[in-house]
Length: 94
View (cartoon, rainbow, N blue to C red):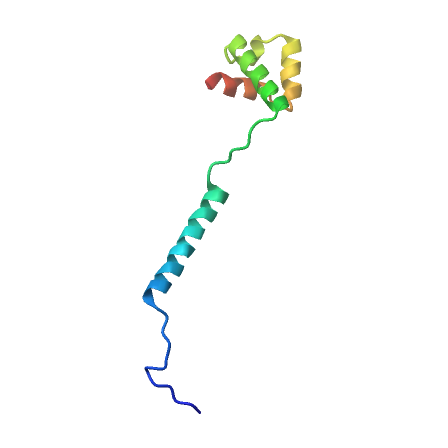
């Protein structure tokens, strides 16, 4: 059984512990930003066209779905899974 002197024992330098801690903190900040930060997904052209049409209909009707013609109501409902009144109301509040 070998006995080690205090001089023979290697100690981890304090600056190395600090560096590892700093790198861990930087990694956690990056990971949090990547997973919980702003989501920058752009609309597809079809989604943009749908949104533009709904915005246009909201302006035309003043946010009142019942003021649209039956054809316009049917088109908005088909675009929004029968939630046309909600979509027009929300678009008018923008």
